[in-house]
Length: 187
Image 1 (tube, helix red, strand yellow):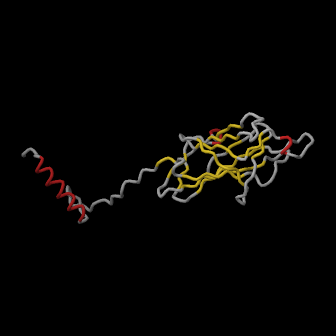
Image 2: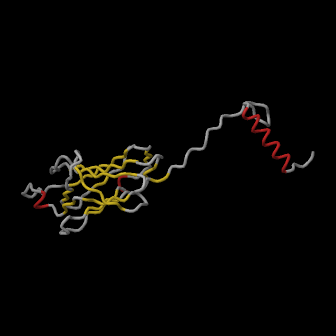
Image 3: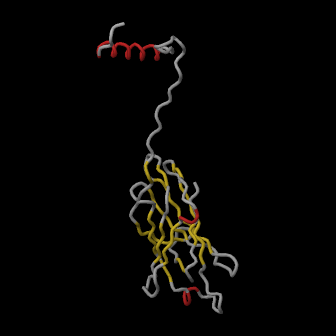
């Protein structure tokens, strides 16, 4: 048996490719197995590949039920991206009269959520927006009144987004207390 040279290895490789294209395996004459292309690498969703909205709750909290806002992340790129890891939310009072509310969704689970181009992932944010000790005016009582919030996707820089209502009109994220619960994203 002769040792293989680079030239004979190349001929063998090219012969194998030609036979595979014809539907047989070069080494045995058996039908070639179907080869699927390698999956495209999916990158992380970032500020450069997404648009983010923060939609304030449409209904005030009750003594037993929190108000529920939502964070919407839409893939604006032409390629899929993945949300995996903790997303951070920071709300600063517009007047600077209260400490910022800071939370992330790590307690809710941060399993990977794949977003196709133009697809949106949503996470709920539960919070109390009223004082239940006598007054119903969130404007007078809640220490944090934020018309903008900062949202940092996993491993990315924070970006500031306007708080809107479900109709897209400007709104306010009124937070009484520190019990803000940021849920996991779902597609």
